Length: 258
Image 1 (cartoon, helix red, strand yellow):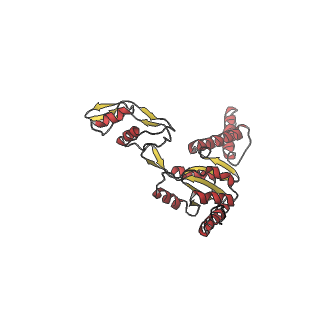
Image 2 (cartoon, helix red, strand yellow):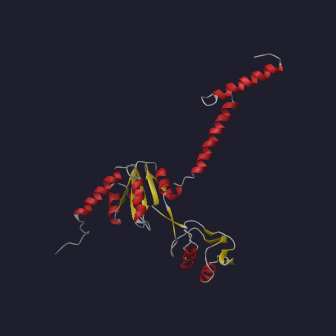
Image 3 (cartoon, one colour):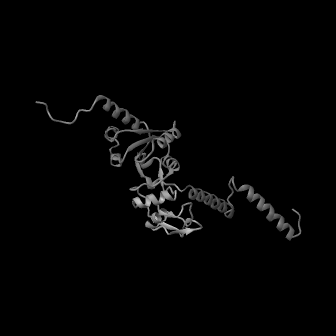
C-alpha cells in the first residue's frame, strides 16, 4: 500500500527553488514586489532600465516561498502577496524604490480599483457634448451643466478619497473626462537591507524637501563659521574680504591709509 505523505516535487521545480534561493543569497538588498495589474510592457521597460544594476525574478508563489525558506529569509514570507516577484540588487533600498516610483505611468481607473490618492475633478470646460454624458457625471456628484454648447464642470469636486473603491459609475465618468488617476508599474511591498525591513510608505523620499534641507544646512554651517570667526576652506575667502573691508572702513574713519 502506498504511503501518504507530502506531494513529491519534480526535479525541475527543485532546481528552480535552488537557483532562486542562490540568487536571493547573492544580493544585499531584496525587494518584494506585487505585479498585480502590471502590464508586461511596463515590466520589460523596468527590467531594461535596471540591467546591470538589479535583477527581477518572477516565480510562482509556491516556488518563491520555498526559496525564501531555503535562503533563510523566512521573515519575508508574509509579504508574498498578489502576483509576487523579487527585485535583487546591491543598490540602496531608497534609491531602488524611488526609481521604481518615478517610472510608473498614468492609467485609467477601472471598477473595483482602489484610489491611490484623492481623485479630484477640476472646474472648467470639457469637450463633451450635451446628452447622456451629463447624467453620467452628475450621477457621481460631479457638478456639471451645459455652457456654450459643451458640458462644463462648475466647481472642483473630490469624487473619491484615497483607499476607497472606485465604482462602475465613477469609472465611466472618469473615462468620459479622460482622467487617469491610477498608475501602472512595479508595486513595492517591502525592501530588506542588512536585515532591516522597510515597508513601501517608509521608503518615500521627498527629493525637493531633502534638497532644501541640505541647502539650509549648508547655509547654517556657513553662517556659523562666519559669526564665530572660525575659518574653513569654504569661508576663509569671504572672511579675508570682510576683514579687508573692515580695515579700510576703520582707516577712513581715523583718516589713515591702509
